[in-house]
Length: 374
Image (cartoon, rainbow, N blue to C red; front, side, top):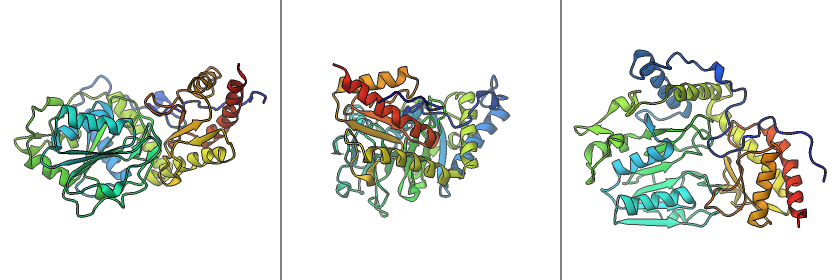
């Protein structure tokens, strides 16, 4: 096979940090807040604007709160677990590395004893019917390192007694989220919206706020995790008064992404773009015997972090990845280190379908090149 001659206009297919939006230009950001205090009238108004636009774009129910917190999605999840877990038994679901990490943190760091781990291998979901919603339930909506997502929220009980705590970092803005069934949702804007790293977003339902105001954990709470004072929610965190100093450059970058999202049809537009991107890869895989999805069930197949396995040895796959990067065709598409060897191609809304179409002949070429090597 001859080497293709056309390269993707944007070869950034990383699953985090993810590609910037089409047409992005750093020079177009509003930089008035740089060098100013985040607590100034200007800084506080920009943080509040980011929160309000997030609430509106996601269509959150009344009473749900949005806070900008430190340390990306990981920080938001740790804050939620350290602040909320303890009064009830916990069911933790895991089918990839990040869910497994939450199991470890809950059992080994928080040292909770009444914990049930419900797990599955990479490429599959655990049995969702076994979840006990009298317990607090911790899970990822989309397994970023396995390419497996929950298909919907029908499995979550409406009359649950416990809280649902959802790591949705590669799902929010790309998948339909049943907010009435989710009490805590975390994400990082460096995923689906292609924002910058280091900041997380924490979304709380009224039920989660009630837990925060009625329960005091038995362990010491680091300042960076504290969401209450005197038994009451620190409302300022959800109005733009962040716990620690944020990067205002990252915040205005996030606002740029939110404004772009609104311009292409809001949440529905973002989801549709991501699903169209997945369809490009599905058409490719369907007629090639050497490549398949790690998630073989289309109902649970991620439309953002698309994970692919090949009939090749791990070293051959590494060579493919290296070759595509050397050709400036695709950057950072190796599978996550704990996952089975393969490729992971980001298909969120900031990726153009045309770039994916141009990438596909290069995958054919790189596969054949590597296979032909002695």
